[in-house]
Amino acid sequence: MHSTRIVITGVGLTAPNGNTLEEYRKNLLDGVSRIQMIDMRYMGKVPAGVCDFDPKKYQTRKELRVGTRAGSIGIYCAREAITNSGIDFESYDKNRIGVYIGTTEHGNVETENEVYNISKFDYDTKFWTHHHNPRTVSNNPAGEITINMGITGPHYAIGAACAAGNAGLIQALQMLRLGEVDFALAGGVSESIQSFGIFAGFKSQGALGTHETDPNKTSRPFDKTRDGIVVSEGGCIYTLERLEDAQARGASIIAEIVGYRINSDASDYVLPNPERQAECMRAALKVAGMSPEDVDIVNTHATSTPMGDIQECKAIAEVFGQSPTTYINNTKSFIGHSMGAAGALELAGNLPSFQDNIIHPTINIDELDPECALTNLVINEPRKVDAVKVILNNSFGMLGINSALILQKFEQ
Amino acid sequence: MTEDQVKQIVIDIINEIAPDEDTSDLKGEISLRDQMDLDSMDFLDIVMELRKQHGIEVPEEDYPELASLDSCGNYLTPKFNAK
Image 1 (cartoon, each protein chain N blue to C red):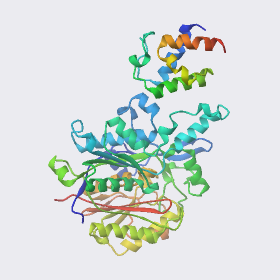
Image 2 (cartoon, helix red, strand yellow):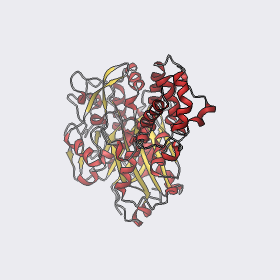
Image 3 (cartoon, chains in turn blue, brown):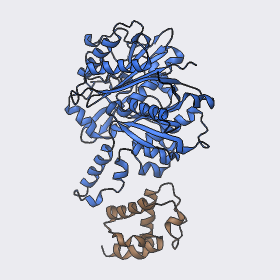
């Protein structure tokens, strides 16, 4: 294990089913998802996860008009995380704070909106907004956080497809260990439900989820009838610190990051590679100095696509198939796929297990796909266990990016 | 169209682009930036909305003419009346 220990001391989030960790966790244990049908430009009704946090809690109306939805989600989550961390933010040296935000994509929303806007003016580009470029630069969500909060340390976005939430946390951990910053705001955000192109792309790929009657049943990883992704917006940002700094200020420590790994399939643009995924999980375990039997929960990435879920199940079976005390769950069955936020947000839904020793289930399984029948898959109802001390959080993405993050219950 | 009507059009645009500002007591002769929190991007928004909503073009060299409500009235009223 690395000598410099990094801990999580605060969390702020917004998910389709909760705007605080408490509300979100309660709904994960109560089986409440809140996916809804929304009107999508050119496409009609599509299922989506929509967040209902109050953006005016931390932003003026002008900031909301000028900025992006991703920026707004980031600001809400970052401010909530700071409050949750208990740090004296006003007197803290803002030059020593880093902001590392994972995004799957950024800019599609604004570009689509502007193309639509100039279509009303016969495609005359003199009606193209001057706000387009500051809204679409990749660092936008992280930069909006720094402007809103007066943070003068480094900020950037980490583009890592749907592994981005984990990648944001890993970046923060590395920067803290390098001594580049003393305090980090890190995680992931997604505004993807405002881009018709995301939905249309998944539809053309045969990967957009549907359900005849109930949007809440659309995201159903591991179910035999699963047929694709529910796109969601959301965000989750953590405060991270070196352990000695957190202890010096008397912080309440939520968890310690003890292992991580990002690797690449190097094989296909969209089809995941279970061998590389298994290697990723094993490498993270090696960093943590752990064996599969040490892991109590594996939170899967599974997105409810026919092939992707099977591939991940193969990888998990290969690593954890002989571990009788490792339980497997999935959070996308509740909140859909929150893209760049997914890794961070799904991890947050599981962190309370360190206190309550309950594992939230994967829901919407009416008939388990035999190819996804993992041992100890927690199906439809929460599972109480003796103790949860270690969580492994998987997040994978297009172009074959895999990430695994291992969190441990904090003990001296 | 009178200068007062043109000034009201400008105030309506400012209300859209700077919704947190109180525009009820703006002084005509004082610079808008001295009375409100407006930046260069906001002035570009004013130019864009004049173009979109009213078909009025303000060339870049004339941007200083938009400094105050009075100068907006002086500069824009002939343009509105020439439409």
